[in-house]
Length: 114
Image (cartoon, rainbow, N blue to C red):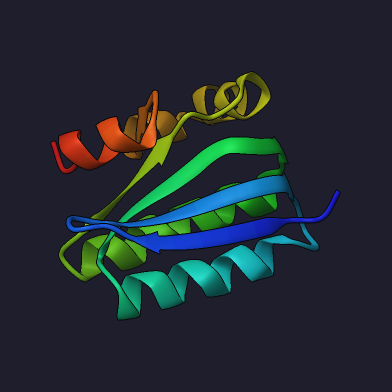
C-alpha cells in the first residue's frame, strides 16, 4: 500500500493525516510534508496516525526530525490514534515518552503542549 497524506490547518495546530505504510520508500514524502507544514502553517504539529498500518525505523526517524524542527520553531509534535502495531513500536523505542500520544486529534490539539 502506498502512503497518503492530508494536511489541515486548525486554529492551534496543523494536522497531517498519515494513511498506509511508512517505510524507507515513503518516509521522504512525509518528511517533506512535515517540514512544509511546520514552516508554513504552524510549529505545532499533530500527526493523525489512525490509518497508518505500518511504520519502520525510517518512519521513526521522520517523527524525531519533525519533533526537533517543531521544537526549534517554538512548537511541538503530538501523535493521535496510532493503531496497535504502530503504538507498540512507539512504546518499544521509548519515543512515546518524548512525543506525546493521544487517543484522537481533538484531544491532541486541546492538550498540546502539556
